[in-house]
Amino acid sequence: MKPVSLTGPVTFSLIIAVILQLIPVSGDWILWRPNFLMLVMIAWVLYQPSRFGIGFAALVGLLADTLFRTALGHYVLVFALCGAVAYLLSRWLTYFSYFHRAVLIFLLVIFSELLQALLFSIWDVPMGLQHVPVLGFVSAIVWLLVDKSIASLNFMYRS
Amino acid sequence: MKNVFAKSSSPLRKIFLVSLVAFGLMTLDNSTSWLSPLYRVADSVVRPLYWITNIPARVQEWGEVNVTSRTVIEQENVRLKQESLIHLGQLQRMAELAAENLRLRQLLNATELLVDSVLVTEVIGVSPSPQSHTVTVDRGSDDGVYVGQPILDAEGLMGQIISVYGGHSVALLITDSTHALPVQVLRNGVRSIAEGTSDYNRMTLRFVSPTSDIVEGDQLVSSGLGGRFPVGYPVGTVASISQKPGDTFVDVEVDPSAQLDRSRHLLLAFTSKDGSPDRNGR
Image 1 (tube, chains in turn purple, cyan):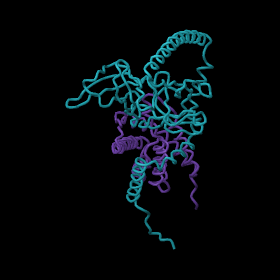
Image 2 (image 1 turned 180 degrees about the vertical axis):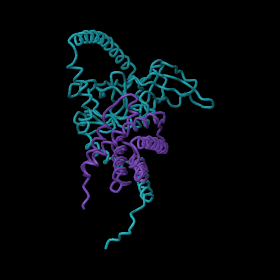
Image 3 (image 1 turned 60 degrees about the vertical axis):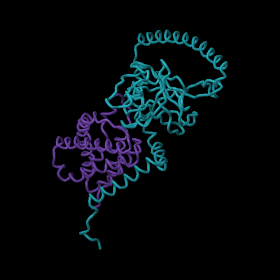
Image 4 (image 1 turned 90 degrees about the vertical axis):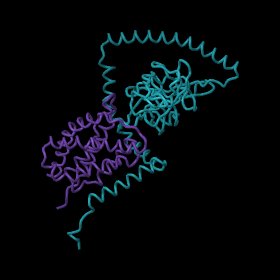
């Protein structure tokens, strides 16, 4: 049986993520805004590991690089490594509760921020880390919504 | 015949390959400008999405205009008239001072003062990354915008244009960690360089000697050195001065004057030597 194409729902979810990423916010919300592209990427890797893996994560990272105006390759590396963790854990994570997956997202966000700080330091770009715990917490809360939405999209196109 | 036992590339190998490509791209992007066309293409693709992302702000603006009581509008009208009168009075004094300044400069055989005209623009996009402080404005090369053009809000200097497209441009803010701007203390003319720190509310002064005459509360304005920014635009206020034991220079933190993460309507400054308004009557 030919597998159902997921190009439509994946593109749709990525466009929504880009829009949410571009909405102007002010004050501390700039620092606390979750990386919607990363959350959507992780969700698709978790729900469809046979189709979306490290390559997909790297491509979404490339999109993030052009969007965030970071040096090309910066988010490619960050997304690929986070995507790889999600890919390697995907077999177990599908049996986890939403809460446990949110905890993993909290840890992944902290890992990605530390990795970014390391990459920025190579090019002498300062990056504060004071906002990281709050960002991880906000991302974990938002993840519950992203997780449910991608699960519904995945279910709709599978059935 | 398809080999059913064939193994796909292992995740570790994929990670290694992706890391290699990523580091190659980062090095290329940081040391050359070969990849800049890619950013231009991405900007053009993302441009229509700004219309959608600005819907909340537009709804808020519409609400402020249409869902305001008559009394509030009348009060605001009175306040604006009073403010306008005060500004007109100050402008008359400014005109007199400018004429006097010009006469004195002519006496000294100094170069002509640069006269600035401005173009009002609106922010249509903000960089989604906290590390990159850029804004997208709704004026481009069609309006005469050029790379390096200063951009300011009602409170002070905000940054400069770094990319220009047909109908929009991207400006780098003064708080971006890659931005530096020559400033001087308004009180005594001491010169320094103000650098961004990736924090919208903080800048730092570089290489300030402990004996420099800079105190907390000093106003900093653009010095005009380098020819990129016009002279005299407010940049910030010295917020704190500290020195770590053993350091040769003091750490001077500056609170930017401009509302960098809040201002929506900005001004693009055009500088001309003759002082005459340009073709658009700006």
